[in-house]
Image 1 (cartoon, helix red, strand yellow):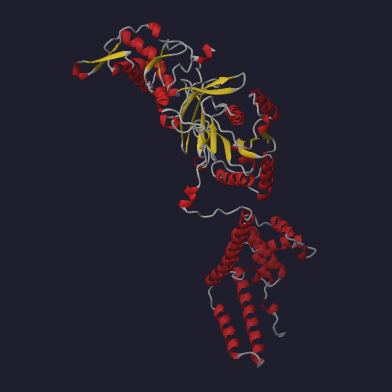
Image 2 (cartoon, rainbow, N blue to C red; image 1 turned 90 degrees about the vertical axis):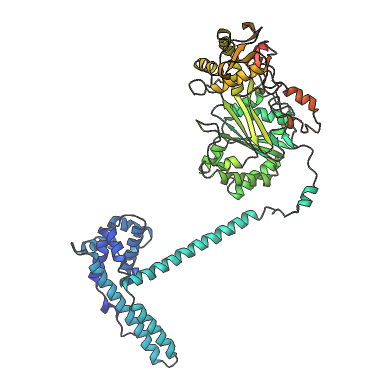
Length: 595
């Protein structure tokens, strides 16, 4: 720059101070002045004023106050306060006092902007004059630069604000691109250790022979599958998992009904809910024989260490599972881990499930179960919809509700399962407290309710022979029976010949109690409900005909088991009438009395 040019000839210190002072009173004043000062801090000549203006603009952008104290603290945090001189904090108050009451900040901002533009133009022309005096500079190049500067000077204030905005947008866009490139690089580093699967033709894919065992647990858990046992509050999910572990390592039928093919490796239990002492006591009461085939990891109070979202942490846990020769991993349960990792159950569960699958792959574990809670009022897994499609099979453990709609802690438990190649309808569970053993022993809650209707149905038809279906329903509904249960019980009684039907007026069906039926043949509906035996198999006939451990069941054996479904028979224990459900030939409530 030519030494003849003195920028201070185009400097109004009081105008700059007034703009800064007004900005300390009102953040909105900063916004209004910024629209007039397209050069931003560069429009102020004094360096300290440039720094203060930049901080004021940043405070406004962050939604913070621009008062002198907040401004002072922010300048100090940035290490700029000392650069204002020994009287820096006092100078801020001096600036605030410079704001003229009643004078809009725009007035002084226009003065600052005009002087800044004059300085810029003079600098450009001085620089151009120097180049014109020197023959070494190309005339066309000098002319183009001067013309560009004049064109820029001709821009309106709005044009300059837009140009500044575009520069800021480009700067932010570059930051985003940097972040995306950084994220991409990190993802590549994380996946470098994983072997990418190769494409394979269907011919080659089908050329691989199927494994002889299709299920880890027949009809419930496919080999290589993921299961999600979902249970209501205090329904007994930990007891269910204990039964699962015992069945897998001791090769006994799960729930007394489903044959098991034990895995080659160990069962790894990751528990984050129970105290170690309680977990130890409950597992001891399971009377597991092959205890050496189970590895325990108690995480209560240390759930945060299971941060498998972090690749390094996940690798450490994978090494531990691999060292334990774990082939099945059971996590009990999901919610505490999500909470510890700061994940939202309703939105972020999928992130954890992806990391969990990666953990299994790195550990060499082929199968897993993640225990989850149902919602307080419902009977489905709560939270992210990803929890519905992640598992191959979902198990459900529910408690029966009372007449008031509330769930009784001592109520009967029911188990069901559905998923890929799995469809196990709801069945009653029997609990043996001596070894915490669960057995699937009967039909669903609806089946049990239908059997309870029979005594009242017989009572009513004895007193009202020739009753229509409509009158039967109207009479039995006040006795706390549901219409569906009444119809199911009536159909079963008709099929069993316990009730006869004849045509009446207007082709109405009139029902009478069959001859030979008396009160000794049924149990009063007020009798206490108890539990039954455990010879119940809840899969369909087609499922029964599938291979069980490589051996195929004869069709006549399976058909015989189900041939009387829906009929009225006599309970093997009490001898009274009952509806036969899926081959079960005793009341779901009689077994405990027999034992």
